[in-house]
Amino acid sequence: MISEEEARRRVLQSVDLLGERAVPFSRALDCFSAREVVARLPLPIFDNSAMDGYAVVASASGKGARLQVIGEQPAGIDRQLRISPGEAVRIFTGAPIPGGADAVAMQEDTTRDGDEIVVNVGVHPGEFIRRRGCDLAESQKILAHGERIRLTTIALLASQGFADVTVGGQVNAAIVSTGDEVVMPGKKLDQGQIYDSNSILLQALLQRCGASVTLAEHCPDQRERLIQAIQRGIRNHILVITGGVSVGEHDLVQAALHALGAKIDIWRVAIKPGKPFLFGQASGCAVFGLPGNPVSAFVTFLQFVRPAILKMMGAKNIDLLKVPAKLAVDLTNEGDRPHYVRGRIDNGAFVPIGRQESHALFGLSQSNALLRIAVGESLRAGEIVDIQTWD
Image (cartoon, rainbow, N blue to C red; front, side, top):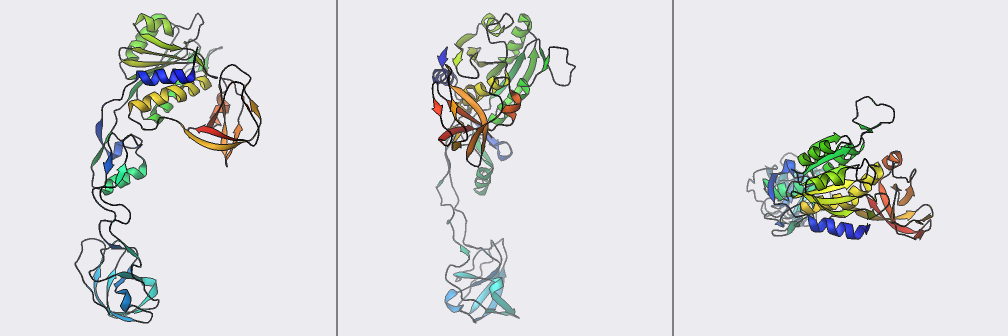
């Protein structure tokens, strides 16, 4: 049995960065940029109005001033209008500022009188004008290498006229769930059987990471059928097997992998829940064997599978988000492995939820965070602790 730190190091050392690809914005969300991107246009691109109103010369637009309206500039093509002191141009939000104007008088602060306006409130130079480049300068970095592409990042890239973005490679993943006791949802349960929740959970976790699930199948505890299922699975970049990785007579995963010439790098990790964790390589595919208990599968996925996928996709940050929170109760780890306690963080406080056994799926479903407690560590209510979050 090895430490979780050593297990993570070995996993990450064994997986490689995939090649980059150009994708349209419609498929770029939550991918990771394969290149640094800099602005090729300033934002705004030109001086424009922040309000509907009138473009004016501020020095000639004191309270009570009457100005001649000489034209109109809507948002769109610049009409190349120009004003002098004592004149105004009707203007709309986002429209280019006419030459000679240095301020915009809000519509609400003026009174229209035929071809003239009366200024009801004094106007200051620069008022309600968005200056060229005040938000973003040309050549300013807008996307770092390895940065996750978010909704707002896509909007920023589009503002630069880019049609697509270069991102890390697509990770293809397969899932094989095992066990005679497991039945796929929708089928009839016999006594002693349970529904397969693990493969459904893993599909969601893989998709949340950005991987494409190309195969998800269930295999009974039959050696030859398991070998065949694994053969199909290792055609992908990663294969996640759930169940069958412990030491019982019906735990056939290791034997099936060895029969296919797989190299097993890790078996059993000092982590609770999740000790019977397996990692190896087969035909260039990274193979993860996760425990059959759902909480164990969930925790080991987050600690080992997720960072591997993110590395392969070119992510700069492969760790779960950590946030400080105030602990609501006393907690002590008297076991021989670091313990990941499931709970909920609300309004800055972390509260453990439900039973902390590896089978307790309901408690996990109500949780949104993990607290790692080291061996022998005691934490007191009111302490500030770092919490890992996944939602």
